[in-house]
Image 1 (cartoon, rainbow, N blue to C red):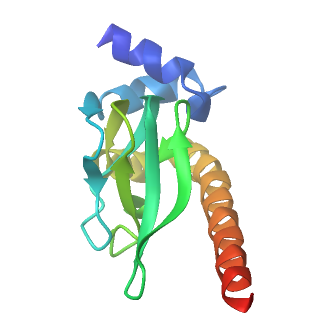
Image 2 (cartoon, helix red, strand yellow):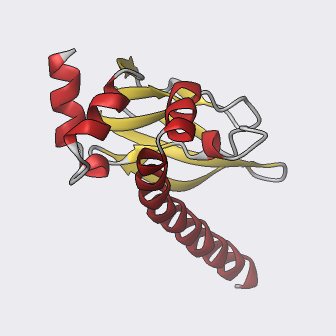
Length: 154
């Protein structure tokens, strides 16, 4: 448990978070590993977890009926993966696939939501940090759509 707490404290997503809040989060955390090609989650599945990536790369993808999987963004070490767990109906909006062997800290979404409901300071810190992630993912998708449109125009 101590090494997990050390990983949490060192992860950029939780940087500057109070030790009290980090100690709450560690109770919802576990280490996980994904091999290259493994799907971490799929679009439409229940969003039960989110991940703090420690090592590796993950492709965020969306399925397009006319073209198959479309790569939206690559998420790497030190980044966060998964935000759909925060918003009902708690369904993943993308596919996430390991591009190489990936190690992460998996956080149980239900556990985190329960703690956030009881501890508003924790809830605010989590929401504040996720707002930045959500914004960057939408920006990546926007640029991907611009590229797609440009390629169809020429």
